[in-house]
Image (cartoon, rainbow, N blue to C red; front, side, top):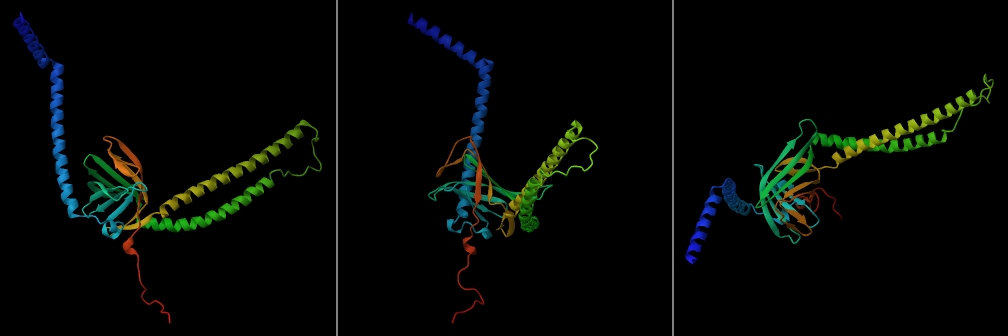
Length: 308
């Protein structure tokens, strides 16, 4: 009896197994699993190759923390938060090597990628892009830039328009005060009126004249304020361009804005360290460190005045 039950169970299991094998849904799941295994194997091989390349290239190009900020030597120091920063090496062949530094100054991880400078087709602006990939994460920077000719033009226009803005502010205040004082001034009454002053037509004409004068003054003040606000916004735009900083990377001068945009994937800056979050995208601001310790001079100047 037991042997008979065992044979029945064995036959039932075989029939169920064969039905699962030959069912279309099971076959579809099996094909998806095979594809996923192949993709995982390819990703593992690419990560191992990238790790080997990054280890060899970064060891051949070590970064000295004390020299970061020397733009004559193609190195950038970018602050992500008050306590976190990244150190970037920008090579002549558009390659970039990035080290992620935590609050204690320890290296969290490395990334390798490309950097390039892209100009606008129709405008005066350009962007400096730094894009790199590490093991399991991506990090991208974007800094606004303009040409040197446009930068010089912006500096001159800003200084000129700033003086105009001060004069315009003083004059506009005087004009607005004058309009407010003269808003209620009415012309004198006629010496020989044709219509009686007590008539409805005379009262309507007087009321219409007062309303027209007040409306005229309000329109003048409104257009004056609109013009002042438009002029101030134009000055602010010129000031934003003029406040860019000039740096040298690989022997070439770039006019770049200190603050830029930071985009990361599977990596976020959190408090005093970096945190890995697979699949999470982070967008924030970053600041370019413009300190250049090598450019400071010590000692006396040539031709200086000697004290007796």
